[in-house]
Length: 136
Image 1: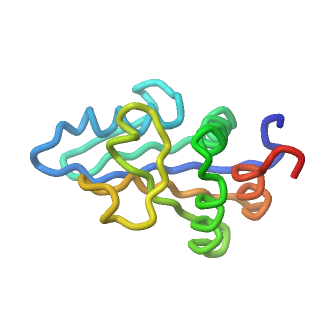
Image 2: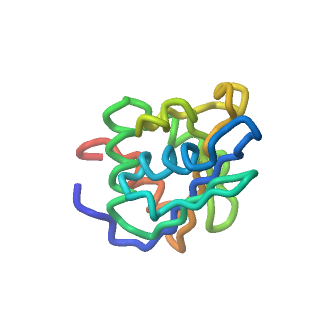
Image 3: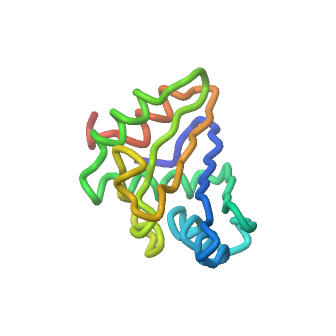
């Protein structure tokens, strides 16, 4: 499947506890989407990454496919859909090594989840594209 024909903004956010290195939390965010360190910012209480790059969305889609969690991700994105945005929680330990692992709730990630927020004027199409099965 080719790159999306819609525009979307992807925001990844995570809290940073006092015992954590903000740079390491920020690194987990950019590893998820395959961008460089300059893509994320971190402060004493939080880390954040914002991108509109189609390649970042493609990496999320590929991870959902490879880890066989498309249906779980789709269910959460549809459940959390509000207007032109939706969200999904990801496991933070998995994110630290660049792996997308979907969480059903914040308690499934001991350090707290990474919150993925998806914004698009064509949100339904964006969700369909991210969670599509081959030929479907």
